[in-house]
Length: 373
Image 1 (cartoon, helix red, strand yellow):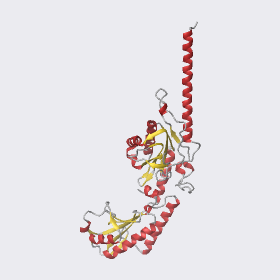
Image 2: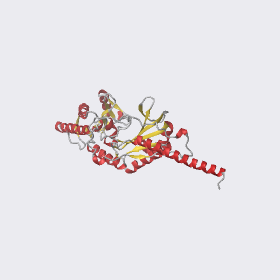
Image 3: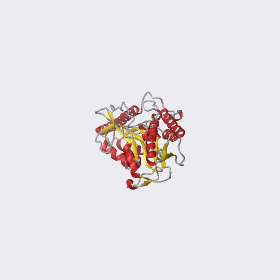
Image 4: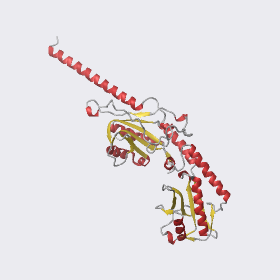
């Protein structure tokens, strides 16, 4: 027969087993509830959305991009290592808002949502992501919800705030082309590392969706990417003293920048057109002592808000140069540009910029300046 001590020990063992089973079930329930709140019900693909609510969706997107978002699950400490301070708080809810488009634009960025149970210190998080992403950092923006102010803010190197709601925004296209499969895989792998290291849940779109949208976006941007250039050369083929150019540039508010090119700017300091050495080359040092074969004036069509106005302003400067240089206006093949040809160019600029507006990428706007960089 069992002794009273043995019966007591068996009872204590059964109680311990039941307690462990109950605790693990409770922890699992809390984790599932947190995951459900973070993911939510079925969501629209963020890449399908426009610049803001109520705007017409972009013609680039289509049904082929629709898919359910994916998640990177957080990694939590095992029960024998956890304590009250790092358990999941069931009261934690994801932020009710999303960052403004200046920080995370779902039309040109791949956005990952990260939700933490506990506050994540920005200095530690910044250092970790910088070590993980390296070169990708130039195209990556991090933002966090400041719970004191209720405002989203960009996370930078010297940010001392702590966050529970974070967003990563990776630009998917620029003038170098769309993001590649390897780059996106590296980004998602890095997010997975951060999710594990900081015990956060991360939600992201399927790679196939992001890559398809990036290619479509890049294809459209390339179709309207146009830098129009005209040249002023001396009628007799003679060189012209650059000192005369400097005087004219001052009169017409053209400023020589560090890139060795004169820039005409708008009221906001944004470049409207440029004036360079013939062929678009920067001017050499010691400009005042040079003799020039001609000059080139250029408008970067996607990067100016009013392309036709910018072109008119360029032509005004070109005509002053023609008078000063005893020159003529020619294209890159040295063919003289007639008024009819200039009118055709002006019309084409308006056509391209109208297409950009129709695709929710207004020329000279925030999106265009990022995409055409």
